Amino acid sequence: MTHGSLEFIKVTDDKILDFMKLAEKKIIFAKPAFLKVELESLVDLSKKRNFVPTVYLEKGEDAIRLGFGETESLEVLLKNAEIIDLKLVNKLRLGILVVDDKSIVYMPELTFKYNESKEMNFPNGFFFNDDITIDIVKQLENDSQNIIVNNGDKESYDLFDLISNKEERQGNEDKIIEKNDSKIIVFPKVKISHDEKSIALKNIEESVNNLTHNPAIDPAKLSEVNFYRNNYKILKRKIHGIKITTRSINLKPFNTLLPKINERLESSWHIFNKTDIDEVQFTNIFEKELGKIDKKYKDDLYQVGRFGTLISSNILNQYKNEVNKFVEEFKEYLKHEDLPKHIKERFEKNNNEKYDRSKLIKIINSSRDELEKYLLSICPENDEDFRRVIFNLHYPLINSYKESNENEKLIFREFISFFVSAKLNFININKIIDDIKVEMDFYDISDELLFNNVDFIKSIQELEINVRSNFKGYK
Image (cartoon, rainbow, N blue to C red; front, side, top):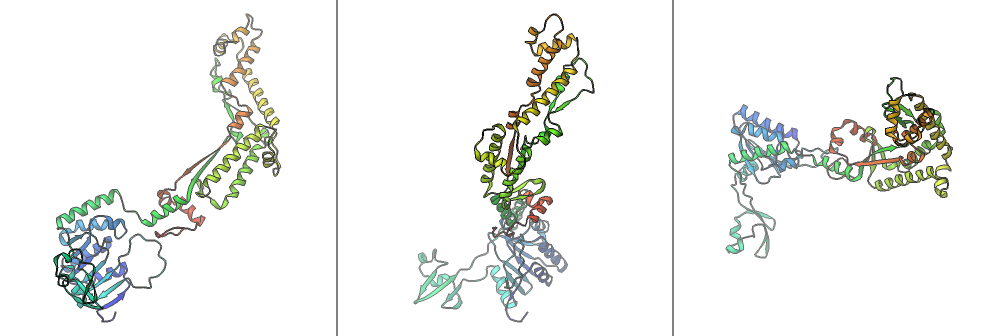
């Protein structure tokens, strides 16, 4: 540091704390809002060296919400109010720190960090020696005049000396005034007004309460949330009806009709066995064709683990419509043999497997026949209670049943055929096909996921999506 009255300097949080430690008898600190550590250091120094520091800060909570300080700093002020000369002002956007007979004036940094990687190579403040510091203190105490610049010469005049007429004075305090063919630029003095201490403390308490219930949010984080919300959605996709391995029939409704329930009775019936699944190739065809659509949009689809798929908003509707169209065409392909050429080629041209509708019908009918044989085998013979139960469920059987029981097996078969269809809802080929669908739900990306969910954050980082992670903007 040279011995001039003014020097350009780089002001950082650490340097501010170091400068404060030089204080022996006086600290005046003005900022929009403070860091907790700044005020803790201020209180500690004032106690050790027995002086009352003066603190200027902005009224209300806006400065903290803009990122100039921390809510915890207000709590430090409330706790130590009796040893601080506290002054709340309406608006403050400058940092001023007076330490004894030296001072610095600087632009306060935002507490919300935005990955500023470049080293500062231009000063962000001024250091002043005692001569200018005296003027700074006077002006903070409202002991100064307007500054008049007349053709480059700075002079201190009262504005009213330049405007003699009262009407001309009003509303002209900050305008360029013509005098003697020369331009005089008036930089008016700003009177620094502040609330009484009791009012100031009440205002700070209210700000702490508001910020506690509705905390300040980093604008950088808000911008990042907005970036993802505007450009991506989370896709949760569920495929229904295509995995025929899960197709089964609950046999409990039939078992409860029997007079004695044997624990060895089958509780469910698997419609397809492994051999059937190998022969029914449409599941493989479906998965391959859906995979082709995903591959087509691979530059706009990002897998994020258990959270689903990140999908670009630009292609969302197009992707959704294409998948839905594919599902409808696939169902048409399964239902009908006489198909438009483009549908038939889509599902057969580049696939080794070919769907055989008649084979699927045969497998379903065979499975149903086996089920009906099994149910017939567990029906009790010559059991009047059981016959009464099935007659109540299917009244037309009474007309088929004669006085003798020689047709009992036939009656049982007729009842079982009715029960399998009406009560057990055994599927047919159209039911299998109609159940096929792709359910797609799209969700906004929440700030909770972006900033608090470790697994999601890791997934996003691995994707290396080109995001500008500062609050100035994203692209």
